[in-house]
Amino acid sequence: MQHIVECRTPSLGGQKWECSKCGKHHYSFHSCRNRHCPKCQHDRAEQWLTNQQNLLLPVPYFLATVTVPRELRALFQRYQRVLYHILFQAAAQAIITLAKDKKYLGADIGMMAVLHTWARNLDYHPHLHFLIPGGGVTPDGKRWKYAGPDFLVHVKPLSLLIRRLFREALKGTGLYDQVPKTVWRSNWVSHIKPVGDGSAALKYLAPYIMRVALSDKNILGLKDGKVTFRYKDAKTGQFKTRCTPALHFIQMFLKHVLPKGFVKVRYFGFLATKKRETLDVIKELIGKRLDANEEEDKDTEKVLRCPDCGGILVFIAELPKRRGPPQLETTLWFSF
Image 1: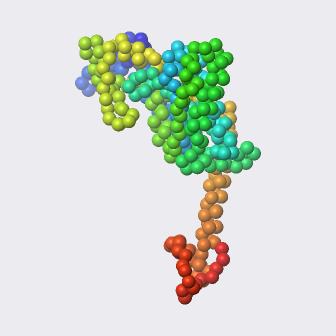
Image 2: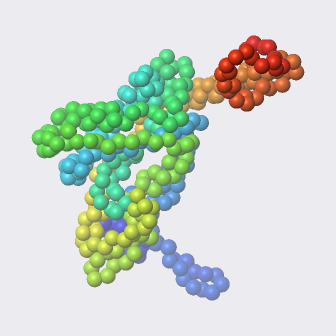
Image 3: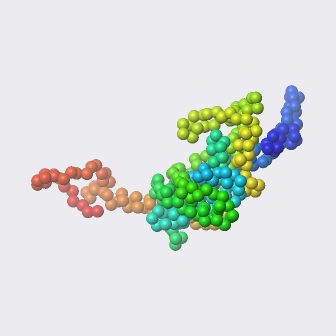
């Protein structure tokens, strides 16, 4: 909090400038560079976004969101480093396991995961976002296999598997007995949606990477010891305001400050840092698949042509069944 208070103030020093024409002095004070400061992480977020865009593959993408039950939030807040890590591992393993299943994709996938701890009204709400290329490499490593345009895996078995893997990992931490029994019977909400080429999803995630919870522009005022801020309602898309005592506001903000050195962006599957060198091979496989699809389209055009003039045959309509003898009509006989 001291870093944020002192950010871009004389406390951190800076530079003094003088206008050569009017002689007026101008001051530029240093930023605190704390990763939780709302003021000084914009440039780093832009750099992160550029780096991630360079990793995008020429395929459709999916955005998966994994949440935990409300009953676990207090425990997460007390043991952040341990439980965030377990959630990362359980969710990633569950998605990768189901994607490998032949009932779904039957291929090895890659993905980026981002930890997000707040709701729009600043409440504590830990969850993960996964940006996932829509496809994967077949087990023999020789072919790229596309996912369906709007389907990757079913969310119900995904939620159940995440819950089971999280439970198994928690037993080794000494925290298992602190979890209410109802948690293992409750619904762990997960959902997956297609997000086009992934670039828009990256722009959505970028602001959450380098700052926390609330930007300065959304703090509307401080009066009588109370802070008023605005947030956009997720359901209506309309801005709402919230007024809370200043100390409670600080407490709400600090819930989202991560443990020192904790990594909030992680990579799995073929996007894991140690496997990043395989991306060139994967891009080559995708390119071959795209070329093959184009050839199939060309072959289809060659087959569906008029046997007399060679013109392309265009589908008009299905002909209904008729009772009685066929009518005399000009008929073209050709085979496909």
